[in-house]
Amino acid sequence: MKNIVSIFSSIFAVILFFTSCNDDECVKMWHTEGLSNGVIIEINTDAKELSLQGYDFAGFGGEIFQQYFTGDFEAIANFKNFAAGSGGRTYALMMMYNSEIPDTILDTTIVYCGITRNYIYSGIGLNWTSGKNTNGNNGVFRIKKFGNNLLAQTIVGTDTAQVAQNYAINPIRFGFCIGTMGDSIVTGISGIKITKFQVIGPNNVTLLGDEFTCNSIQP
Image (cartoon, rainbow, N blue to C red; front, side):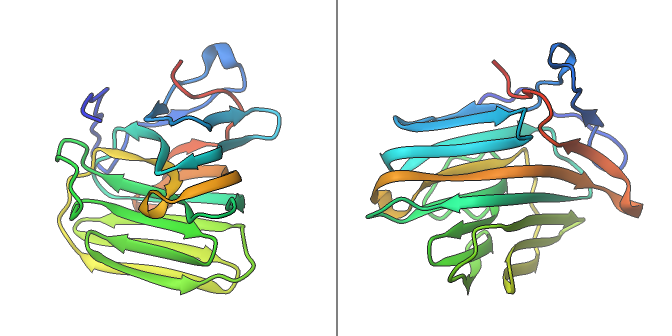
């Protein structure tokens, strides 16, 4: 998790990237890492969705990320079909963090919003909150950064889990991951589908978007 592909700067946030319907011209904006046995991350261009799914796995399952974020922005991801396998505690989340800082169990640099079988949750560093989720598997992940004002939010149906905090962070990576809490063992299929990813800057200017119409994952 230490290789920095590139960081692009602009006045407000990010350099514009848009995928093309022609896969030969598709911008390869996503990178995968740490895929464990039984976990697959792929883009289905027919269904127009990013899929993270695993079968019979435990612990960290895999990550798909970008490396370019700077400035002020709000990232919104629509998701559907979250599924948790049997016998373990599957999670799927969207996160923003500084990959140059060594991973620790008390990582205070990460901003995240996620979903499990029983609840949704959001957090900034060690400050996190959860909300009940009894029957929903479709919703929205949202992470907003304007200056040092941060918001992490997960919405499923009428349930919301969010954390708002003034906190200085220098994010590098932004992406999604799937895994099991406490390295619990999950049997059967677990997964989530991301149907749209959009980054909005000041004055509601769209800075980046991926509607998964082509394979934008680096080979």
